[in-house]
Image (cartoon, rainbow, N blue to C red; front, top):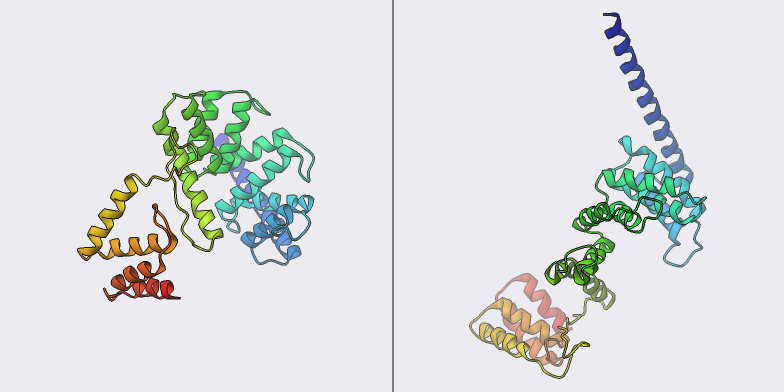
Length: 291
């Protein structure tokens, strides 16, 4: 009974210690929010990123000011004040700062610990960072299988760096089976993100994807090839009344893609046919074409 009582006292002491630590980190976070003039941890994270990276290039970077804010957010991951995503993002950002000596004293061990903490909760960028460290043997034991494991989970989580790393390794057979199919699986999501980003920068204008080959490594070549078959298929479907085909042809003619030159009159024709279906969304597209 005496041993059980001592054990219960020890457990209670640890619980009280944990509660005290959580209360302390919560207080520190609330103080940081108040000092920064923000309402919560998410807003504090956004503020820290602006200090760290500069406000879209319009202000001077202040990494030394950002570091304690990242630290406060990362430390409060056991409280209800911080979401897990925000805590992991802060820990990962702080890890990179310690790794590079960016605004803080360079500390490889501290960086590794921060990456490991975030990676344990499934943070893709932290997993990617650990993969790089173990692949290079930098501030961590060189361990290719472990690095590949980190890369795999990071890529599954959406890390562009990890997707590129695995795509490259499978394409050339570097520390992985040479497999063009797997390389394509990893490269494709990155390519889609680049296209999407480019289209946003172009105000939503269509960015035509070009198939590359050994004969035409830069694309083009003046031959539409299979595109002719695609266009003919859409035109046949459009004549049969397919609204989706009509919209596709309208979009291709509006922007000039799949070997077609921009033809606003023809685009207007196909948008008009689609709008005749009576759907508001398609009518909105028709209005855009006629603007």
